[in-house]
Image (tube, rainbow, N blue to C red; front, side):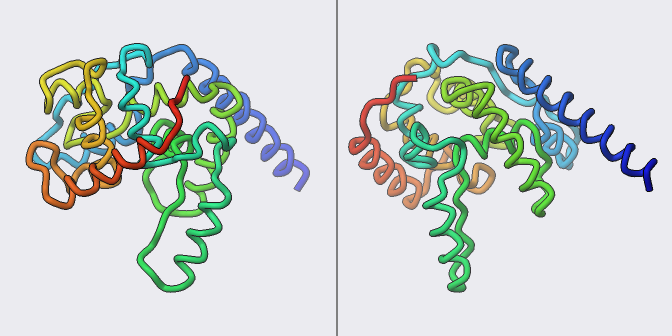
Length: 223
């Protein structure tokens, strides 16, 4: 038992040092590979396809895009420390009532999941996601979290990040995205493999309109 306990302690220390080091390094190094990219490559039935992704600093991404994802995904992004407890409690009540499953992940949680976790839906993954959420909130801060999030989000099969998305679907750089284009990109984030920016449905157009209304109600964000 003493040996097993000592081994568990060593493993815990190694994991803590390793994870903190990784987060610290990615505070300054562009995130170019994520578990989701690897998973999608493996899942491609016709063989591996090189992901389309172009890293951009937050200064080279239009503020409209920042406002759009905050309005659509996490309107308390600047207020919380990684977790929106009000949204979590509401989601628990919603799900217990038997309605369609309703999530409450913040942008910080989604970033932690995209960069550090696998996509298995279980409590172990959720615990790991929560751990890394605390780390990136502590070591990165809001500006870096938003930068990474906007560079790793999946928007189409094989397309990641707003720069590659802007160039593919709007033939411009992310720095030039207008309100309408930004809201359309934000619209498809919950289901990027089901909704297509190249052929937007009526539902997508309506959702984008609601996102723009929400953007108008938010104060300008300075990251």
